[in-house]
Image (tube, rainbow, N blue to C red; front, top):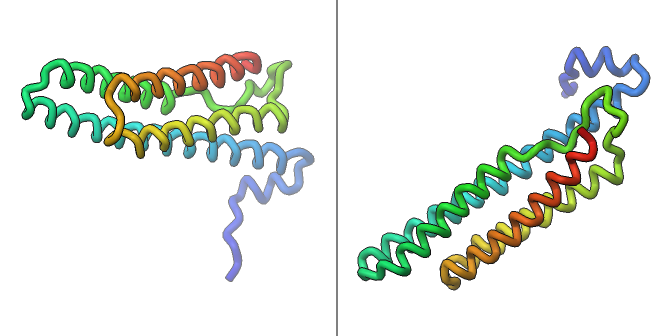
Amino acid sequence: MRKFVNIFDKIGSFLPGYSGYAERNNRRQSDKLLREKIATTLNSCENLMSIKIRVSIQANENLKMTENEECRKKLNTLSSKVKYAPYGESAFFSNNQLKENELLVIYQKDLTLLEKVNEIHTSIPDLDAKSIIKKIDDIEVILNERNEYLKEFK
């Protein structure tokens, strides 16, 4: 079976440097997919917190319900921040083009974000809202570092 070749890729095969451009584009797409996965996991965390909120309402634990709601809101905000964070790309004519090792720094931060979010997801049933909020704050620090690093290349 013959693999379908995109017309632009076929034309690009004749242009010097096109393969590097296409590879960078694929990396950007992977970066986007990874952050969408992180956002989806955060949405799942938010759903788990909603269950905790319902349980605390049924148990008439207003303080716990308020703390859980605060945590749920922070998860929702973090999900949006991750989903709409800037991509690992630089402007085409920018003097500060992202190089391979600089992209790796961004991807490492994204991987750390995924690991930390998965950690929250698995620990929600066992942790109180304040402990989860602390973990969310730690993730926000990593995300802010990532975004600040990317600003250098815009």
